[in-house]
Amino acid sequence: MSSTQELYLKKIDTLISKLIFEKKIVEQEKDCFLSKKSGTHKLFSVIIHGNETIGLHLLEYILSNYDDFNNLSFLIGNRDAYLSDTRFVETDLNRAFLSKERISKEKKRAQEIERFAKNFEYILDIHQTTHLCKKEFCLVRRSKKSNNLYKSIKKSLNNFSLIYLNNKKLSNDGSTFSEFATEKEIGFITLELGQKGFSAEMFEKGRKILQNFNEATIKELPEERFQILEMYSDIKKLNQSDHLINDLQNLSFLTKETLIANINNQEFFMPIDGYILFPKYGIYQKQSTELCKILVMNEVVF
Ligand SMILES: [Zn+2]
Image (tube, rainbow, N blue to C red; front, top):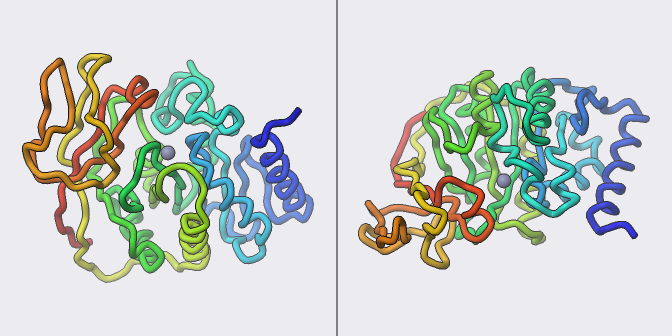
């Protein structure tokens, strides 16, 4: 018997085959499809993490209405992880970029994605968080093209918190798709639409952003002042038993000295008034070298 995931992918694959047959798209690398109309201008990617499934629902919608979205090339990041309903199969795909090794399924996959993605101008990468999320957010790395991309589609992102990253590695676990893109001078936004799972509201937000991305003319725009969240620190895991206190959510605000973790058998407190990002519990705590990140609010002009 086929699983729900297999059946859903079959549906997506049928829609893709139809568009290939109609000569609207072409498959350049495995699960990487180029828009024949606009080529390597705009790319959106889904399922870089296999269990963040909202992206696949958005992809199904776009494939079913492709004449309205035909400026967008697209890729399905990690089909095998989706089929097993896990974040990844062997290693985290979004920590497998810019690596010469081919020691895991995902490191090989990252190289296929790199070959396809390297010539694009702009990329939108759709994710969801593993844990609860107070508010949807996006991550933008400081670069001219990412700044322009953000400003060009900001009307559909107006309820999203903006996490603005300087060009430093996000994680010691490996390099992300966005780090690869920034190195190649590709404008890139990571969207975090909310906690993993499906809701009509989350789908509608994602759909509007993709519509905006499809239609936008991305160009140099006047400077503006933005309220942003920026990295303050990573909370590293020293021992396998180190853990966060329960119920920290993405972008929850905590004041300085609030207890947030137990590290090396000692209580660990917020070092500053700030926000929690990517809190890791359960299997995610086991797989990572860190427990969470801390963000602080700031303003930037770009
Ligand atoms: Zn993700």
